[in-house]
Image (cartoon, rainbow over all chains, first blue to last red; front, side, top):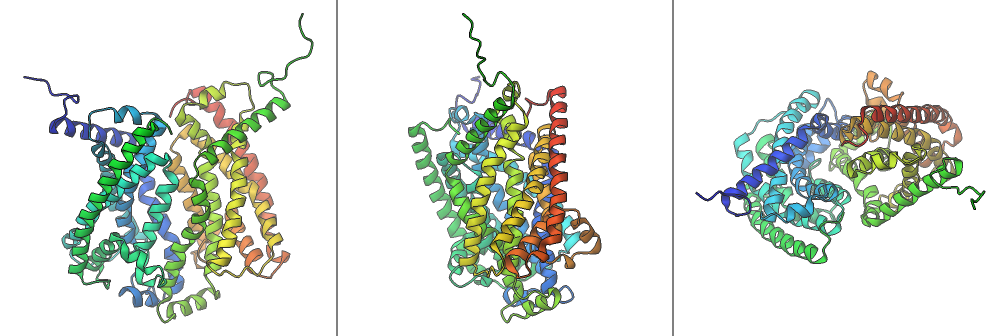
Length: 283
Length: 289
């Protein structure tokens, strides 16, 4: 029987490589346990100023002004849900672009690139641990956030997963293209921070997008994540949606295919350019 | 024949060698800083987008008919929230950047594997930390200038106060902000989990110092904690100096507190650096990451 190794690429060897990547990231992540604790509390700290600010706009804990835009006076459940979903979105952004930057800094990027593993698989592998960790920390965040700020959901949790699936897959398309830009520019912090922050603002993670000034509204409506967050909130806390729910689902599925296609093409083209320039090993 | 003139080099420790080493660190940090041009994007974008998240949330909380805003005015006594939030978030950004840049300076060297070899050179070790703060301070002044201009022109914030008093507050705040950065960098070289510590420290500032709301909204115990944080006084003083016409009397108490906190934090940062550095050498943790 022929021994199957990584030097003979096949589905099995790819799966082994994927598992090795996930195990490596997992080990590295839990090696610094305080980081795990902080990933539960960090998003809660970000929304604490919103909580106190919101108190100043509310009467008996009900934000009447907020309900005119969103359809709910419970602004903290709205924001907490947005924060949890945003953590998943960031996991894909950070998981891929930032992991490549880490590989560059530690000097292992070039050697990893020389292995006979599909490059996109390396990117996916880097995001898996992040997604698992985000799922664990999100549960903690909802429990603790619920205790501190209050979190009330009355909707169907399973139905809420329907928009999440195409949204997350489409996000991988974004992530591929983004990781390629990080490779080219060899700088991730500013790119990751700025882009994820902008996406967070314009997709309405902390407020309903119809509160945006008119000239900024088209930016929000052009982002597939806006519809994803909107649909999940409608299912879970019964907020008003921008478009009918069926339309939002169709848009999410279309965006998913388009973004995966564009992201993959952009990554392949930019990755070829980086190899031609010979800057893969630099940081 | 042997020359009698001693060659002054880094290998002969002395004040001049220390200054040379400090200057070398400053130049290295500046070179690294300008090597990645994305800082230009950060310089112009962060001052706008960071407060924007809170400002837009406040706009949503105000409601279409402004009923929420009326409640806000009745609760806080403030009539305008944009400038208030912009100044609060600006000071938070300053402390946050210092924590990442100064606090991470030694940790980054540890990650790159150059800290141990640098440590073996006969230089004043605090120069590594101080040297990384100087270019950072220059870039922070640029950031503050750009922020002020963007707030005035994009957010239409009315800076009715005094520019000189605002500058005075910023100068008085430097020792506290950077002293905390030095202390932080010292802890990180030993404990290593830098991210978690940045999140903790900046989180405390974010929650307790009133970056988006008046402190009177906080529960009493939280107000007591905020009195022990220099950032509370920086935020209050900059708001008073830049946005109101109260003049020097409005910031006198804050300035006094900032001078006291500045002395304490600088001394604490320096002592902690020496202590942690010694500990890291004894345990052999300098070269680990």
